[in-house]
Length: 134
Image 1 (cartoon, rainbow, N blue to C red):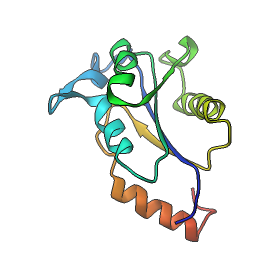
Image 2 (image 1 turned 45 degrees about the vertical axis):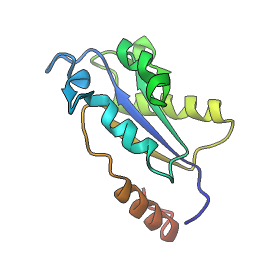
Image 3 (image 1 turned 45 degrees about the horizontal axis):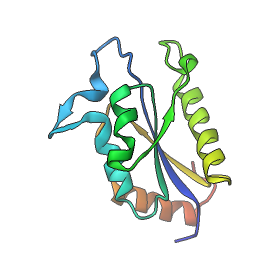
Image 4 (image 1 turned 60 degrees about the vertical axis):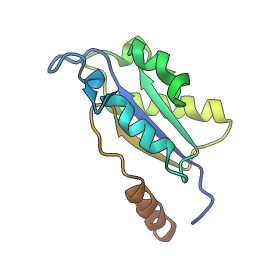
């Protein structure tokens, strides 16, 4: 495995219209947004785990659970805000904080429980062989 700088970014917005507070629904005694973050933190290849959010509970819980919080600016908390813009903002903020360029960004969604460290490891191995993959 190469020495790529791999970081993870999860996104979770407070203002869902379809299911109110969906990112904070309790699943197995933890809010939904937290599951992927914890799996990321237990993935040795990932050097840092970040959450872009405007959810007060998630902001407060960063130090408790050991993930870094990126406060999402109001313009990225609107119904019309794009996920691409949110990811780009998060990436730029991570690079500012770590002082260098991220090689690989693992993107997670706060309203899912699909982070799998085995899949991340396999994906990184594939990128070592074929770095042009996305």
